[in-house]
Length: 391
Image (cartoon, rainbow, N blue to C red; front, side, top):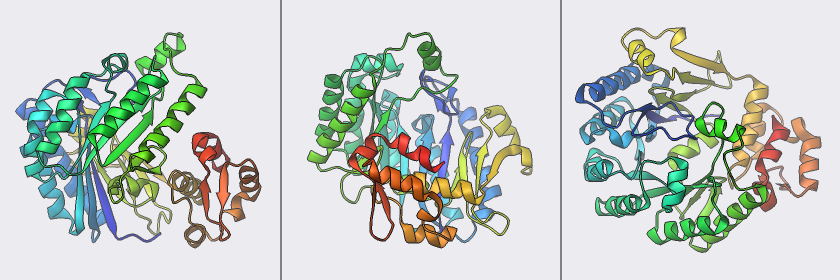
């Protein structure tokens, strides 16, 4: 699959509070000292300089600062990162520059500075407009702060605003989730990301769940929430262009689409994941993950890259085929059979004919005359069971 562009992901691991469901590479830090902040940014830029050669000649399509809580960085630090990335890669036209932000008062005050630094898209981690739900999720903010932060983002001049919501939170009823949807729609963001709470091994929520202490909606309740979300957001003009993402026309996330379309991404920072482009040694590409240990990451950036700095997974054909199907089916566009055949030498039926027949027969998958595949409405609700057929 040919692609001469690159997306850059920058991971900022610091968080005011580590949520009990979080399995990301994060470090609790209510405030960053100037030395701590500068040291981490220096390390990011050192890694960028060292690894850019692998992506040489590619045009920058997107830059995404995630975490953690990248809005804990000062605007000057964000500006420094953005400037250096632009100096490293020529731009592929207008570049989407996204910053994840939590609705705390400190981050809210910094929004105008982030806009001036070159950020043009804010992803706000609201999660819920219910104080009860936020408390059960272990979030540091409350609903009033979320409302203030969303208003402040508009006042700062952001015309691309994405809002995150969580469904199936502990104790969350359908009615409470419907109220979250109504308030989200009322704010009029261009993009809404909707995530079902997942229980990750080793997290406090996983321990509580194992003890039977985590009261979550059952499968029927979760399906009702998903159906209500699609109905309500569609009525408000949002298209579900990916399983967890809804957007007004023209406001789909440029950076996130790179993952679903398996396009190159350079990941920088603690725990960041990269998707290296195909090469003679790795015709289906390589996925690399940086160490999740902050001290080790800072140490590694001061010396030449070694094999121990990051885990590398060289894709074989079977793994690449499975990911191509899984990721494409997450999107409303679905799987392009001709493009798949160009890359792997045969259309999807050449590898999964029996599975495709069964899934089409069960009403979970739709097959176009040319072999293109996409999930049906029912298939989207039961997507996990569909994806298992293509592992």
